[in-house]
Image 1 (cartoon, rainbow, N blue to C red):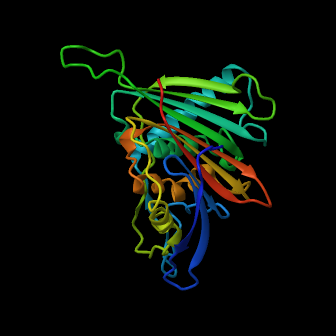
Image 2: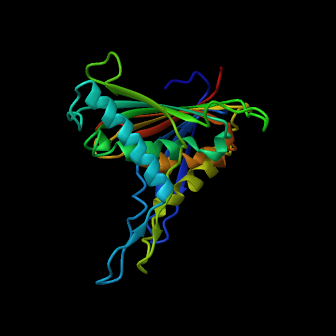
Length: 284
């Protein structure tokens, strides 16, 4: 990601209720780009918390979400079998492209949470470990909203393409289907355990407070967002890293209804850890 605008530098203080506040260097332009110079963090899974002693962990997942994820896995299994591809795919580096076509508005199906739901459906059965996903794209296409007198051909559809980033070429697996799309939802915890205090979950507010001093995102009807995570990323999930830093965009004035394209990628580096984000006005 490159920018030709004048860059500003600043230091964000990340407040820690247990002490040892952090200082994080930022660089950014005035309207569309910012870089956070730190080792990328990832939000722990929703079910990561500290149960009471001898307490059995019980979680109740959304039935609709689980059915959606199984539908995703089923389509990919069926396609793989039809073309003779053994699952899970060999260990490697993969890119996943997702296209959502729906009459719903974008804020009803937030792209990052739809992405996470799809990747959870892919995990283990299709790709043995979703940490092998080094790039993911998701695009929102709104269908016309039909009147009551007009019967649509289908409510909404999902297209998924999985690419081998080493061999390049055509998708390794490509599927599409018409069914109801369900974003990632947190489970209900029913065991009385105490959640751990995860300070990283509020990290975005301390960072965005410094960015807002000189940065104002250009006004646009819809946006395309690029996020690149560089550092010790091989053992981190691309979607869980985004969950830490994506809320910065909301703090800067972008709401879910305006995000129509989201691109995530990660790169291994031992010398220059960073999180780069580039906001672009989306063109048809």
